[in-house]
Image 1 (tube, rainbow, N blue to C red):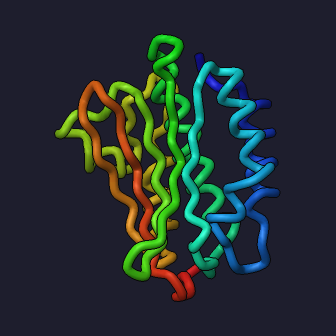
Image 2 (image 1 turned 90 degrees about the vertical axis):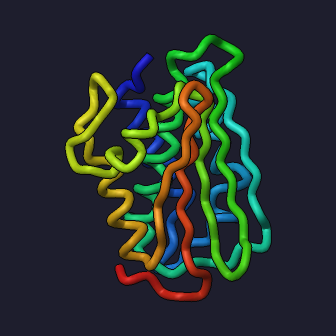
Length: 177
């Protein structure tokens, strides 16, 4: 159940509009409200439930809106792909934002099969992929973009129970983009 190119392009355009800002990105508002309805629509077409928990206290982040929206797009689409082989009713992707100790956190969690311990850091290596139709460049690029914004991108996983990708950004500091 792979995403078709036209669906992915439309998803990217919609998410791009949702995250558009001259130089400031606010995850709480930009990922919420009507803009995520499109994500939920795409997910529903794939039989995936998308849940969101968005912290309204999140301050805007300064940075490259194109790069940051690419990170969000890649993590959500990876989550949708990760649950595709799960039985209907067990396909779940959660998008969550939190503001804790002066940091803004965006996490994307899926109910897929998870990542084996030995592969956790390898998923950030260029050209490493576990997908039959993947180049292995999405996550390394995401990590570079997050780090260029003074943030960190990490992954946690319990094999057989899914994975969580977490971006943590210091609030109130401009990105290096």
